Length: 476
Image (cartoon, rainbow, N blue to C red; front, side, top):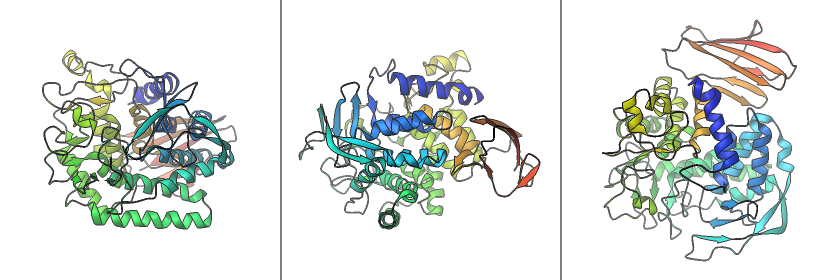
C-alpha cells in the first residue's frame, strides 16, 4: 500500500493519464472530458494548479447548450459531440472538489468561451467535427450551471435520462431512443448537486435542493429490487440489473453510489452492499465484478458492451474503476475490514507475488489495470494497464476512504476507516512550507485528537500556513 500510494499511483496518473494520455493498450493522445477531470481530483492535494488548469480546459470544450465534447484531440480541438449523460456533470463535480480542498472560489469567476458545432439531430448519438470558438462566453460558474440545468430532465420513472452512455460507454443503446433512465445517474447527479449547492445563488439553490429530494424519492420508489437497486430502465421500460433479468442481474455501481452519495435508504444500502458481497466479490478468484452474469444470449440489447466476450472488460469482468468505488462504499459504511481487504485484492502487487500468479495476471505489478477477466479460462488475467482512471481513484480510496485524510474548507479532517489488525498509521503532509506529522493509534479504546500537545475537539485540524512543523496524534 505504501509503495502504491507514495509513488506509483500518482506517477501513473500524472505521467500516463495526464501528460501522455496514451499507452500500449490504448494509443490515443486525446483528452477525455470526464477522464482527465477525474484524474486531477487526485492531484489537488499536491498540485492544485494542475487541477485548476484542467477544469478550465474542460470548460472550454463545452457547448452553449450545456453538453460537452466526449473527447478531443489537441491542438485542433477536433472531437466528438455525444449524448452521454454524465460527461458534462464532472465539470461541477470536480470544481466543487477543487474549491473544497483549496478554498479558491475565485475560479468560479474565470471567463471561458464556449465552442460551437451543429447540434445533434434525431437518430444521431454522436458526430465527429471540428468546432469553432463561440462568441458566447461565461464564467466557470455559468458553465457549471449550464451543465447541471441540462441534466435535470427526468424520464417516466422520475430518474435521469441514460442518453448514449452514463459512465459505462458500452451501454450505448439502453437509452438510445431518449427514454431510458439511469439509476446510477440519479445517485451521481444528486452528489453533484449537493456539492455545488454551497456556491449557488438562493434561487438556484432552492431548485437544486428540491431536485435532490425528487431524485431521492423517485429512486427509492422505482429502483429498489428487493435486495439491491436496479441499474437502469431501457427505452421500452424493461429493467436492467434486476433479479428478474437473465443477464446483468446486479450491477456494482448502482449499489456503491447509493452509499457514496449518501442518498440511499440506510437499511437498503446495507442490503445492497451485502448483495454485492454475495454476488460480485469473488475472493477465490481475487476479483470484484462490475456486474453478473455477463451479457451474451439474452434478448436485451444494452449496446456494444454485448460485443465483448463474456467476462472481459465491462462485460462481467472486474472493471477496476468500479471495483474501487465498491471498496470506497464499504469505507463509507464504516467497514474498514472489508475496505482494506478489497484494496489489497485490487493491489496489482498482490497479483504477482509468485511466478504462477504473475503468469496468470500477465501485466505490470506496479500499475493499476483497467480490467481483469472474470470467466474461465482467463480468470485473473489483467486487461488494459497504465491508461486507466483507476489509478487516481485508487489513490483517493487509500488516503481519503481508508486512511481518512481529507482537506475540506480550510481544515484537515481525519476519519480513518482501518481494520483492527492495524496498530495504526503515520501520515506526513506538507502544505506549502508547513508540515503536518500525523500519527494514528488504532484500538486505543478512546477517541482523542491532539495537536502540538493541545487537545482538539472533533476530527479537524486547521491549516495554519505558518511554515512550522506540527505534530498531531489521533487515537481511535
